[in-house]
Length: 84
Image (cartoon, rainbow, N blue to C red; front, side, top):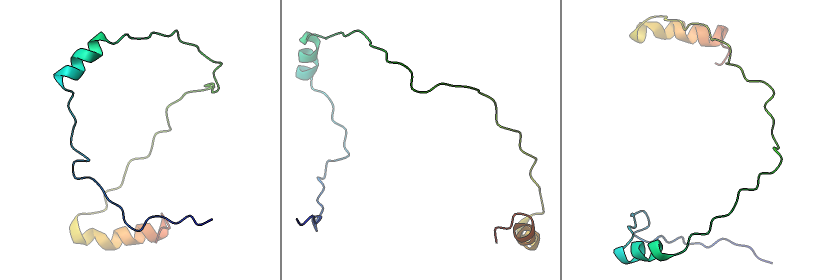
C-alpha cells in the first residue's frame, strides 16, 4: 500500500469569511420541531480530593536598568538560575 500525501494543497478564497443565515433559512428553522431529550448522567470518572491555592512566590529582583544591568543579569542566570 502506498500512503502518500498530495503534493499540492488548495484552499478556497472565501474560506475565512463569515456566512450569515438568510431570512428564508431563519423562518424555516422556526417551523422545524425541536426534539428535547432528558439528560442521562453517568457515574463521575474524576473526583476532586483537595483544592488549594498555589504557594506564594517570592518577590522579584530589580537588578538595574538598561544596558548597565546586563552583566549582573548574565551572572545571575549563570550562577543562581543555572540556565546559561
